[in-house]
Length: 223
Image 1: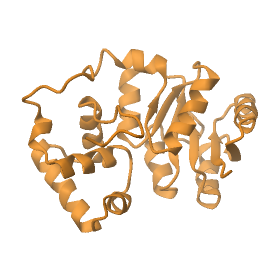
Image 2 (image 1 turned 90 degrees about the horizontal axis):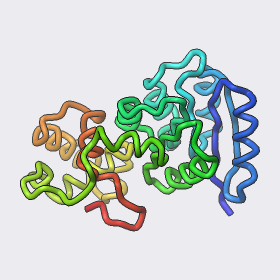
Image 3 (image 1 turned 180 degrees about the vertical axis):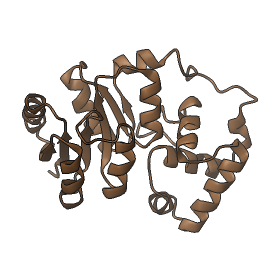
Image 4 (image 1 turned 30 degrees about the horizontal axis):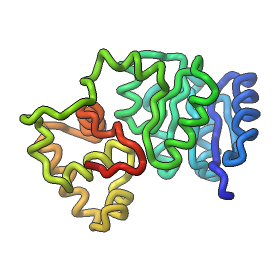
């Protein structure tokens, strides 16, 4: 079995130890490294190349939410799960917009974190149940899309590109998945920004979240 390679980033040694025991008790997971400050995260990730990192954004030497983008810059294939004390809808939405695949509050049950690791490794976004409840009042209910939705202005391919971008994929990864050229993906991104009046990846991700485009299982089609 090919195990999920995990890096633990948290400044509390006792918590790191507990997380390592939890993860390594799973047949499909292996902890390949850990760090208690952000400088050690940056120095170890390029060499270890984990599949998933559980990231505490309050570590010494950290960049706050900016740490998510930095991790994705130095380890593009590593998917970020924010493991935090902040059960805050605004914090959650920003973390997802900046490229995190998962968001788990430290008070959540152990099974939530294990589910998050497996989900993000499969390319799905994961938000633990307690955060979903908090988020409910700050984003639209993911029910039937209104007939006059702005989504109707987008072509099927534009929506596919939008979802993949919002899930944190690079232009090259989007191109590979859709079997098109990178320049084609860049063209679609530019068209999306123009049609939706948005400026960057973070804006596109927020839009996708608000339009409930990311709330789907792994076997469901993009649209």
